[in-house]
Image (cartoon, rainbow over all chains, first blue to last red):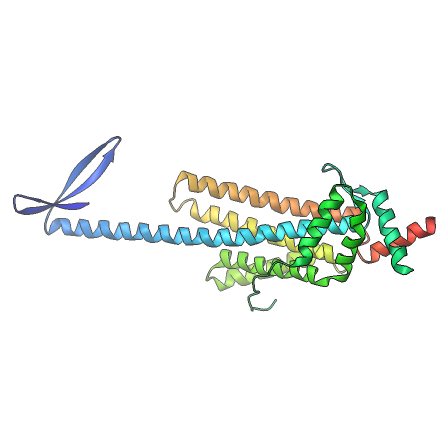
Length: 115
Length: 178
């Protein structure tokens, strides 16, 4: 929306895009158009505020999501470690099964620790 | 639960070592297992670290959902507490408690995504934003179900509880049968 000066008088126009063309819509001259200009300014301000709030929300969301991902990776690591530590093993995303070599290694380490 | 906000937990060297050991065990190197057991049994700080991180993430999700609404905040806290209590049961092991924390956090993430989708879909915004919110809600739901599945798998694989009691049981069983 802009004030345009024509023949020593100012008129208010709003640019409206229609496909590839931009058409100017006449809104009036002072002081009637001033109210429309003010309403437009307020609307633009509100839109800007909403945009800023949304981007702030998005930033906070990304920060929390990053920490949540860290927690997920850490938990999966510990759960896998706990299952391995009791002699289970998982091959190619199949169910967890007893791992004989693993249990032997755990038993041997236990014996060595006792002696 | 206290009102003091938990601070952001830091990375620890034991975690890096554990990561490397688990990677070795995944490749079939059984010699990594005794050290994994030692880390799990003798380094309680690793369980504390994951607990701290879970509490930090939980508070952050509740902050994001409730904002300035004190009533909603309290309600979310109580719901999370109830979830935790009902999923853990009276004799949960450390690993179970850790997975229950993950389930609760993923539930909160799913709640936040659903809430954002419900409140912001009608409030303007582009189609891309709506699609992003929908995808996030679906992803959060999947993660929640995946955490639940992992907890169930753990309980099915080790019904009597995990280390150290179960380790001792396996160890003594094998010694007796030998």
